[in-house]
Length: 201
Length: 250
Image 1 (cartoon, rainbow over the protein chains, first blue to last red):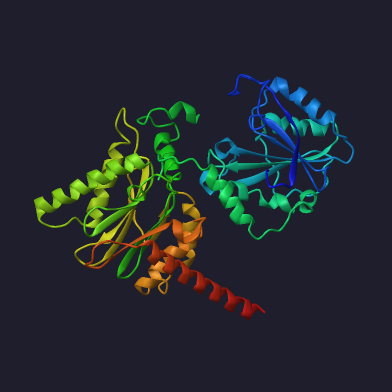
Image 2 (image 1 turned 45 degrees about the vertical axis):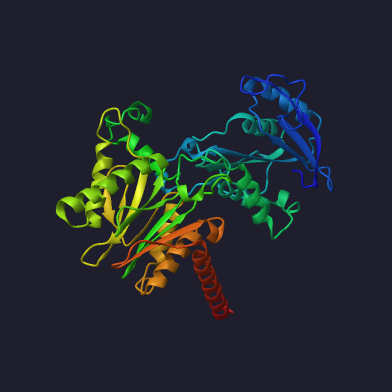
């Protein structure tokens, strides 16, 4: 996010029992939980990076605050989230699943074909991503949610690359820059995040 | 239903599962990939090296371990469990040699490790070992062997196999590419191991470790330079093969 292309335009601070810091009035930008950025070259493209747990009773206010300030006509929302594959309910044998894999859920107003298969019943989406998608459905906003089922607890290169098909969707295609070093950059980002755990070799 | 029958190792579920053993197999998938290939005169073990912390001594993070002069194994899964199993296996190898005055056969030591693992699936208060192992070596008769064990205590002989993360992808690659030509000579077998690993290893040659045993020779661990050479050769061959393909289709 500090590549210079994105500019921070705001943040949402909230507190619930899951938060690690106690003092929410004096949060530094790095501790702020939901940060909003817009593209410098195209300010109508807004990105929200949410790294905290938004409790159920806070979701409505969060949505009102965020969407209330954005115009709703012709808005296109894309939600990216992930979940552990043990939550995925299927009649297939789990050993035949090729994790990580992507599943999609969309609102009625979303007309494009999704980049992957739709999430089958009885699987459900949880927390803030579900709240955002429901909000978009109620307010007839075109939205799609991409859920990546992964078998690792921490984000790694393979899981992030599972989202690559999303970059070819109509709404995001125009934003994608074809950088040949993109894989290298991605690898660098991922290796700095890897925890040096010695439990498994 | 699983949650009622997966707490204790000694409890079967109504449909016959031992969930703790199956969960132990999930722990194996958290370890990095190991590939083993049985050639005609060589056995090859290739592993994906785990990234080592800056201050950590690389020599102490080894996945490939010699059990005796003519047998070695590589594991995937819980590091500490592997240490215990390897230590027991090494003692058994020497004890056998002193008692019977013959080195262990690969099958014998594999059976020993598998029996040890099985005991831990049937004992109260213990959990299964969370490792799978690929055990390779040559017996006195000069025949190369490759065995795989898993947390349940089963063992099987294989021509080529992979364990750990993305093992399925590697196994599928091996099923397609393990041919008589591919193991015709030693260097071809080594290249096959490297190609199989490169299918899933993200960062190329510097994260690969390779070991071979040739008939009547001790275990040889490849140095980083030797691995890089092999990886580059494999890369070149792949490029040439792709060029030929595109010429044919053009």
